[in-house]
Length: 160
View 1: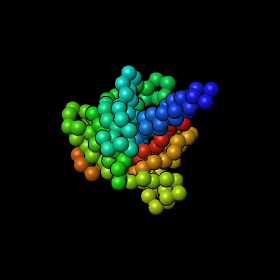
View 2: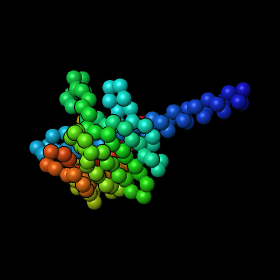
View 3: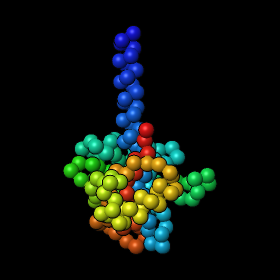
View 4: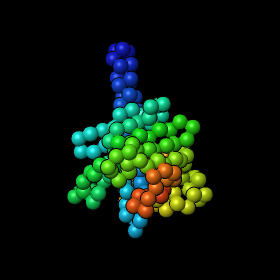
């Protein structure tokens, strides 16, 4: 009985870790307040890894376009997110909207939002749209920045 409980505990905690590493949004606004809701998964594909590991979470990332009921996933590039000493979100060069782009950032929680007005605006828009989440980081575009992509992104955890 103890062995079954131990195995079940390991399986549940492993599943929770996997959910936490995958269930997040990178959220920002491009020119003209065009929403960018970037996720590490699409209809049939998922990125691999964990943001806390040295290799990060990497794979194809997608932007959700449209309403929750009638929207669709649009590829934005082959990207990675890492949380080492600081956060980094970068996409390989290619032919997608975020190809060749690098964002750098730091951890950020709700208690520090008043010090970062750009993040506060994004956070309020995210919560208005999705109702819940846990703020994790704030990013600034540092390479490959154009007017067609967001200058700032927030990372919001949505896992259990």
